[in-house]
Length: 508
Image 1 (cartoon, rainbow, N blue to C red):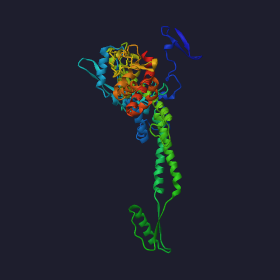
Image 2 (image 1 turned 90 degrees about the horizontal axis):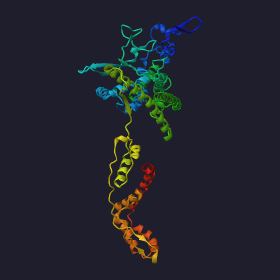
Image 3 (image 1 turned 30 degrees about the vertical axis):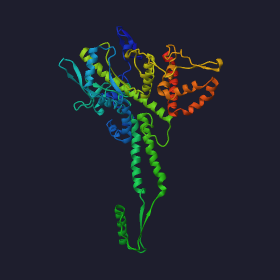
Image 4 (image 1 turned 120 degrees about the vertical axis):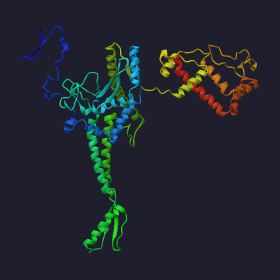
């Protein structure tokens, strides 16, 4: 029997059949930790310790408008994603069973409950199973339970504080409670709640609002001053005071001829009012930064820039990715439980997956349709890169390019005798080796303008006796061209040339 000496007096017997590193030495029970005598691990949250309250106080913080808005905004980033079961290498029987089971559960509601974990640090969810006629068990209900009902013991096991075992809590059965946690560690299985960091900003904000309301009541309205002649009796002064008090309520007063009423506004208190506003804005910024990682999503203020928006959006996406991992881990744990209850441990499990809906750019889709109709053929790599298809998702169907029949045969010039000669031997169809750019431009010109443009130019050239004559007078023909049609052709030609350059590497 081997011995592992811990100090000069104590040692641990080590069975040679068990590796040394398979034994856990540094545990909470063996450490100098007086809290272990309680039988459970108190929540180490610094705010709860200092204020002497339990985690239920965070429920009240969620009702604060800025906090509620930020939490809902954070949740929406994950809840807007699509979700489904990824079969992977799992057996079809297992995957179909999980898909049918999940189709009967309120997945969106469960996702929203899981996303309460970052706010409280952890969020227990109880799974209620039901037996099917086939004898298999499925999850009938997954429901979040109040976090103040639960504690963790010395071994970081979740316990339920019932009426019969309030101090230590009941140890929960296996495969019964899911418990997503946020930034939980061995030393702190309760997690790191975001509302803990929001506690003081919310407290100071509420205090600032209270003082601000008093300030507005005191200085927001003008002071009413009643003036009476010297020597007025006290009873008459009291009567005027009562009249002024009623005037503030009803804005109506009846006074004697020798009495006057003045309204005095205190305009020097605006700077003090701004102090309250700055305090509240500062607290709102802190709340936004804690929950969302930035402030631009909930309030831009009077200044801002596109660059700042891009940075803030990136930070928010990182937070969404973290929440997505939390949701997927929780559902995948439930999938493993359901699979093991019905079939035991298996090699491969189906998994819960979430993804963003790819927004197809309709302008690009319409452009590609136009190009395909014109005879352009994209490669498989282009369809995969542009629309996110997998190689096995589609096949390219061969199609013959549209027939191009120009209204007039192309013309060639020769310098012999300064005469123009028409080459009637050129084919009106394009050879297979001709560049696709030329095919497109010819097709676009003939189909968009036709006789209104091309035929007019051709007719003029035929009337010329020499190349120089055609060259000198050709530019004048553009004065007779429909500028709208000409602009349409040029825009389309320039647009296509840009696309051809971008896709040249893909189509080769």
